[in-house]
Length: 210
Image (cartoon, rainbow, N blue to C red; front, side, top):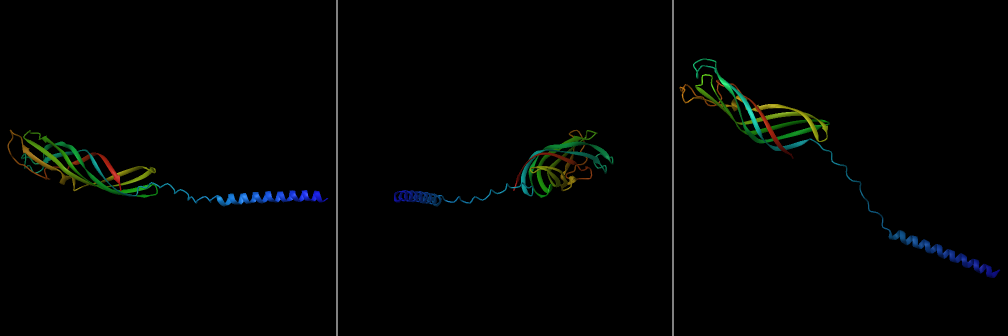
């Protein structure tokens, strides 16, 4: 009876010591493991917007049709005589600045542009006595546009505006006699004898959004 009780007591003591050892090891492991640092969620991707202002440069070519009439007869002696027509063409280049505002899928914008111009042309009047020369040294435009976004970075828009100053003020016309003609009259700058041109331009544009 005493021997059996001693063996049982020894087994109980050994089991208790084993459990205590396991508990101590687990506690030490838990204390050694540092908590994971807090990682905030990544910020959302920025949403593209057309709202903002930009500056840019443009280069290309342009053309302007010009027709002339001797309204008062000062050149040919015949009032209303047709002096012919020609197209002034040449290089243009300059810069532009503008701003856009986006509201939902709609984009509204305003742009100003100023270009120097090498457009010029000439023709001889029907009598072959005079040569009519024209030149457009510069042009400026103010335009507006309304567009809709087909995709966040794709804009489909319509654009329209006007030329500053008036088209007639841009045209410089000179009427000179041909070498074998008689000097009758000469004019410089916008005049009644010359109708306003209709400038058209084709440009290659490089713009940087601010």
